[in-house]
Image (cartoon, each protein chain N blue to C red):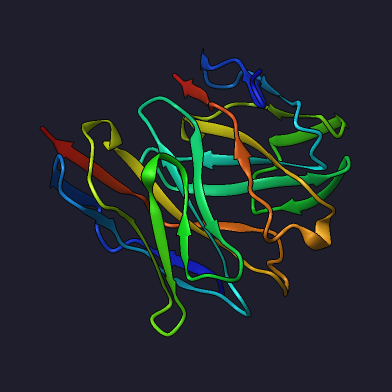
Length: 116
Length: 117
């Protein structure tokens, strides 16, 4: 079965410091991994994805994520956090085969708060 | 130039009523979805259509009926609304035929906040 775990409900970081939002996954076959961000009362915005190739993926707003196959992780990172980064972040995995082909499974979300 | 647009954004209605949420995408995508986000922010797929054909139908009560008149539209009709239906419903779309979907990005609308009283 496909699943995503975001072990931290909340991440707090000071502005200017690096941030990491953790994600681990379980999927049959090769994973397709995604990060989305949700601002209050808004929809989900796509940040970045890993399909194949370079394990370090760069996305929108200065975010990047590193795919680690051995640890089945896809942590989201940013070198220097901004107050405006405060939002709810979702990791998601999609199976590329099997009965759950096409379904996007989301983690439960991590609330990131960046304080000034 | 809204890519995935859904209406209404906010909907407050009484139990037992029937309501619809409309969704349109102007991205030229072949596949559309409805996702539900509950009060704890958990997101789960409800339905998916590929070129107007129902592909995914998760365990959703029969009171929920999606309709796709063409590949750019996917509407959600809910009969006999219950308190537990209160949630945010997201429409989404992605490119590609069903077999090639997995790597394609899903783009979400802004959500429809449904409150049943």
